[in-house]
Image (cartoon, rainbow, N blue to C red; front, side, top):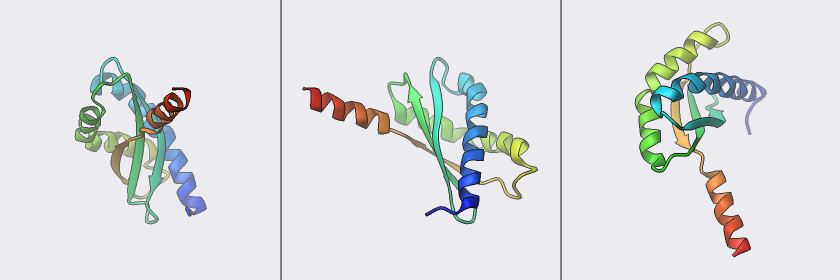
Length: 112
């Protein structure tokens, strides 16, 4: 169970990363939409797992690898935005959030 501080940091990071990826997403993955669906920080606030949803992307694994390549730059931009609120900017680990795909597959199975 996350502490109150972790929950506050989760929501702050989700909001700020969504705004950063809104601009940077045009350069990272042209023609696609990157949505930050959730952020989970470790208890020491040193590592943040960022879950992103990618639409319309055929090869999601290649897309997430491209985002991971630019994680250092994204972390730097995040530091510029939250530097006054947090002492240490957490390391960013990106993961594909495939919950929508799984829900669609289950829905398809139920209908078929």
